[in-house]
Image 1 (cartoon, rainbow, N blue to C red):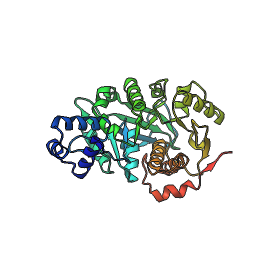
Image 2: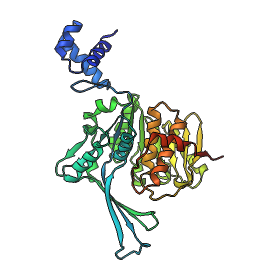
Image 3: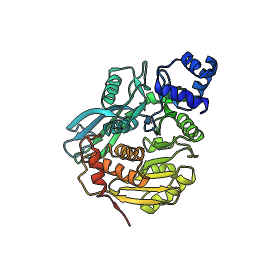
Image 4: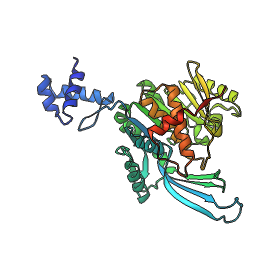
Length: 366
């Protein structure tokens, strides 16, 4: 057995073993042991002290975590005047929501994000931890406000406007990512949203390609889709809605044929697989090997149009980390999305049994 494997085996037996003890057991100098441990940490095999051995099934979500405020008018919207409405505050953010969904499904998941050093940020982290999400890699930034997202819905539940204050993510620097790289590298799958600045997102994609790490990416919005680089090599799966796909490809996405053309372009630019979410028309997915499907959801009442994409990503991640084929993982994602869209919250209580039961109702469009 080579030395790094011997060291890893001893650390698995005793995560609190000292470098001096490793040195004595293996007949190596302490400096040599330190060198092997440093190399293992760079590979993501172990994380920090006490040495945390890589968990093969862990998912790390990196990106947005913010306060969501949702307003819904009680009558048809009248512009230029006050509208009676209900207003609700909840936890939000694409990566944070994906992480919570995964935690609720029993997955090992961690979150890397920036919050303000304020009461809202503290509340956000406490609520996230409640569902088993590891938030140890998050950072509270002094003198900054936690990100907020305020959406306005009409009386029928359709979103008509959203405003966001997310300047804190400008501090999502390459140095911040580098400082947490051993944690990222130890993940089975990394999920990122484009709340990261363009330079940081490009760095993440390139480094995942270099180190052959599995990376899924979701634009945070149509404007933020432009933060993705032209070269998409390093992205295992790109998930985008109709508007985001249009920005990425400079194509109008009106039909399934348009989706096919856009997916082909995205794959040519380096992504291995693409999912285009189409609202009530389901999803279209395509892979580099030529496989593709247009999947239709079962017909059900949609109460709110928020949370569906995060649920889809979470269900698909759940499937992939439970050794399901990609086709089945997408169906599990659609099932999670359909459950969420029929609730008044961005995150729903979903059971594994529900997911597999609803998968049977998803049909392929010929």
